[in-house]
Length: 329
Length: 289
Image (cartoon, rainbow over all chains, first blue to last red; front, side, top):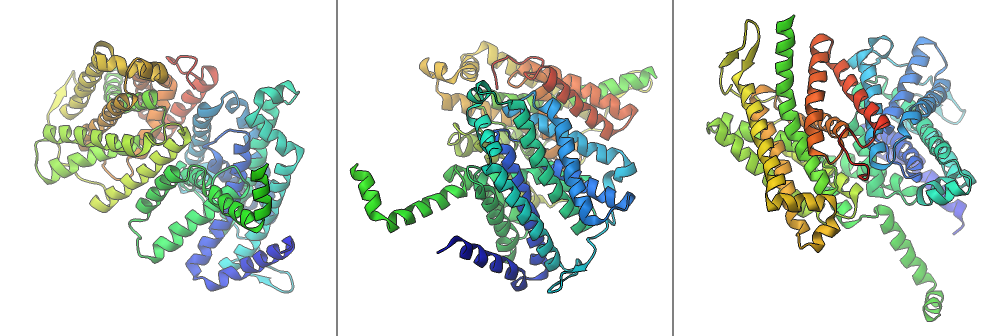
């Protein structure tokens, strides 16, 4: 089957998807779309081997920046989303100076401290961040029409299409970055840092670059979120949200591009739709925690390892001669 | 002014007591098993709920309830060691994720069992020690301070003077060499986990009548404990205690003279500065990562 047919089917399925869902499920779908961008950008950072606990706050930087640009300066909303991403990337560059003096476990904790400071600054300074109550009444995306479809942003479906479009572009860019020489250097920085450094790679610069790019896309995701829900506060970006992002990435697996996205989709569908539908409202965190523990115990390489095993088996089944030939040699 | 300073200092000593109980447990677990136990704040919370269930609901004497809380949370630690950390010994991120999963389970069990609202616990004692004109120390706080001193010094004795303690420190320093000496790593992990969890539980149980007990109280506890163990040096018990005292004083004084959010910012900045200047912490050894 040619590859573009697969993509066409996927596109049609994604376009039709919201029409079979209830209103609240459509809203969850919008959040899911935005979260896909968050985990995908998080993976770019993990490529260099660093695990951050500040990604969600960086996303919040994008959200706050975009909200303030549109509210205080009256900039047109889609432009502010881009500016939010740029602001997030700049903040990441500033944070990289203290943070990249650390590695591994210390980076994890250091990123937590730095991001928690940012979050508390939002809480402390009522002007312009709105204090603990945050920013309310953020300008929504202005409605527009592209001829065949009228975007009415009070409808989650419209926002799903809009954010889906933005997220798809971002994912494509992230994918291109990963496959570019720069992306390969990120891998080298993680797995062969001494060799890479000896070959003239500036490790610090590449770590900073990965951090800035990942943060920029997280900022765009935050801006998408801010203009959808219309109100943000410091608690929307606290460490509990970060724990969810971390879980999606680890349960999905970070060896492949689709791993974290898979983790995000599977866990969100499980948590928000299956458990809710089954009536386990009160017990959702309990089951979610149990799923986390079971998957880390029995699927240490993530959901992606299941996919790989399955596609491996299918490839073996389709080409038994090749496999047996390989075994004979 | 002098009264205010003395009173704030006394409050800081109280805060240092329960923070050091929690942080020392966290350091012990990290040192022996190499996992960051994110559920440590929730172990504190379970200890507090043990007092809610036994002392407030069943009218058991307070100190019996505290002891039961210590043992119960210690056993919870044993369960965590056997079910989560032992199978994931070679997977440090795995241990972290598993402890986050456990945290969510404990939290939702607390919600299911007790509801999300704050628990009201009748005060253990209304007595207040007056030291000078305006300086007062509620006896309930004195219990926490005394318990911290007693427990931590007996822990110190256990670690430095008994064979079990030696074995524990040996396997924290070098697990393979310890195994070659015939020390059972599983055994030392069990002991460390029981003590570490038990200390968190007893801290929660003792402070339960003094704070608002709710299923989400573990969050601020774990953040504080992290700051303390980083500042003190990951893996250093002495460092954890010294850092607890330092952090408690800074935090209490900034809270009293400015406000709580600023105190949090100052605490986190302190930790960030320590990470930048000396990532191994004030008392940490250079080779631990």
